[in-house]
Image (spheres, rainbow, N blue to C red):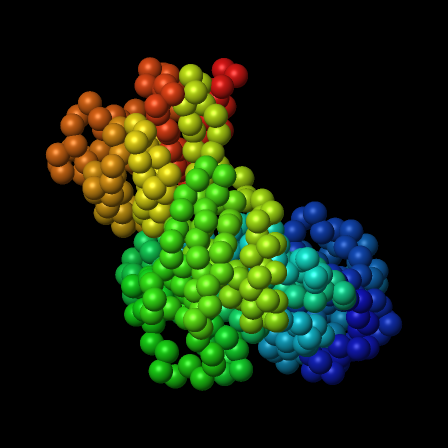
Length: 462
């Protein structure tokens, strides 16, 4: 965090110094207090949700600054603390956030989507990091409670920020955009997910679309041209720049001539009458979409397309994202257990069919989480997906995944080819019977469940 003093922010938050030291240096910001915070130093606390805080339990806050509008807090806080009195703590907090974000005159790229946002974020960060100091969110840790920390961890020499933005609850995306104020927004895809909070798909689409208004009339939005849910978003009131990417010629940047290999994917990128040969070390159409979005965003920041293409050749994918491994008896294991929803399952099924058209294909599927009352419907959809794909055998694990089996049987999949088990051990026993040199196994589940022991038990050295 950039160091600030109490004196430098009094006018910013429209506060009055009630008592304490106006020269205290601020190195951290908090809205919520935990029991472990008894020894805080150089921290400003905005008293927004502290109704139950027993302030007298924290006598060691000699360099702590408390922003409040409650007289009773003043009476209960240690006399060694510094207190700023304001009329509206919530407004003062956001005034501070706006001020702090304004200290960084750098491009900020916000990325959201049901699938692909983490990989797109990592690809774009990798491209930019060749010539810029890049600040980014860590892996897929995009929960709203982390956003303040990400903003405060911006370093003074940062030249760009790439932020993955979640939409697990209503208002999440708008809130994250309020912190970071992106100049460029990317929507990678919109599919079925988070039905526990968004029972209606239209509400989920609306939540994702808030990134468009957040970039403002001087901003740029990148949209997946081939995603029908994204195409439902109304853009008539958006005054900024819109760029479409995809696999169809209607997009401003589109890929064709896709060729899939275990080591990666070759494709031709087309734009404005020019063609570029691209190789990315990732398999499947979904990774092509991610790569195009990253290349286009970098291009908008002044990086030539050729340089981005060259940089992506050395990109290292995140673990458990369609990670190809050697299995026992020369079989092939694909660890795609980072996350799971119908959209990502469809992408994975399509990828293994493209990569291994002649091999026997087995899909191991666990329960998809965060689907609320729509869980059964979503799992039935997956049963339909595996039946319509060219999967030879499917193994479902746990009660939550049982509707997948039900739907597959209903659609005519042979009972011996759609197997339901309750435990990972049962799945291991069955897979050990099936694995050979002609078999590829896709393991797909949510990060909430761990298939690590199952995957390790099926590797070559076991």
